[in-house]
Image (tube, each protein chain N blue to C red):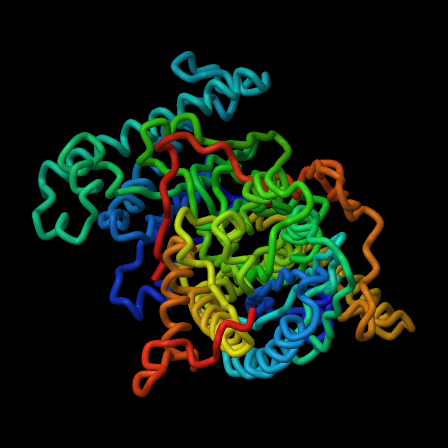
Length: 372
Length: 264
């Protein structure tokens, strides 16, 4: 594939090193003349997910295989080969939706098969189960043993005609468009908050896949485990990071890749301390131009920030002098008013998603748990 | 939208540099009853304790590579007031809480706390970790608080926070009032309610809870984020009680008794 190139990079977390844990992230990529695929999977950190490093490795392996087969099943070159599906099948959004759904099913089935086979070849021992709570010991002696392999998954894939991202669990996929704009490609499942994540190991995992599909090709796609986005918790900080990475790729693919590889250890050292992994797909035919546009945007932001810092407006760190009450902002609820979060917080939808709890069913959620 | 962190980093960094992860911030909230009954010795003790605490927290913040500590404060009498519109460093928190002959609008305080616990309001911009929230009250609320607490309990920042309540004086320690303070901690037991009936206990426990919780929580910003907040809070309380200088007399005619009396 001439236009797109993939990179992968992964470092063990500072806290994992400290506690003697293995790296539970896995990454992988595939490239040929027709497609580029890059995948990242993050095994859950709590003690009950004691084979999540294997779970994440299985997830990457089956994803690369299934996505390769999926893309290869389409007639990408208009050859009219009747054994191939016409590309027009993906023009209709509902049809594309169904195809992606089937792809997700195949990934889940093959992952479950690999887990079952692994457990058959290497059964859980009493030593494996001893540190666990009675609840988990019972589960793992029964049918819920896949939980021990629990992992998240983000797949990015691109061809000359379309691209898509498939996601299960936390971590963020980020897209830079050909207009130079950088933003999250997929919003997180609302059930993924704080250290709680959906997972491949859940009984209703199929309900929790998310995806995006488009025929408007990107300049770059990135996906990272939550070791990255938990260290850059706001949308602005995260997109700033990825914009900087795009600028780095403007100096050449290898230079950009090296910059990422050199930087991931900084993230785990100075940030959350978790395993930190990033994969990406770069359109090398346009990235230099896009990087230039991103650089220009940052310069303009820098100039604007400099002007605002030197203005007369004081920074209000403490609202009032001693003894007096603070002024309240205009949208602050008055005494006695019952607050409707969607009304009173201005940007109601963002606040609602981040700050109000999702509905939790009895057992659908995997706790990522201790990342140390 | 507070973009101070973002803009400073753009200003200072080479265009070619990738932005380093920002240092985390641990928000520590004090929700303080300043109704009429808190007047005099009680509120003076709170103010004196907070002044001492801010000095200690400043040291912890400066010596900690993982996280800074920032303060949020709400007082509540006939209505609740947000004292700190934006997160304040301990060194900059120089607020003297006063009392009027006011009532005890806990419900309004909970509403305002819910509003603050949002990335769109108080918690915007910085890399915030789970908060520590300390409630202080000496009596029964006089407004409707249950529905406000129910709403607040849906806020994940509140849900995952380490929460403590201080029952100040005899009235607060009546079973009905203590039960309310217990509910504020999110616990089904009153283990996270500190009973304080004199100035020394209030000062010592408030100081130790603030300091120990801050140390635990800034450390756990990277290691123990998954731990159950209630269990963590209980560990904090255990450590804080060990450190507080309020032991009963061990000898003499007052052996076993509270040496500081039960003034309140």
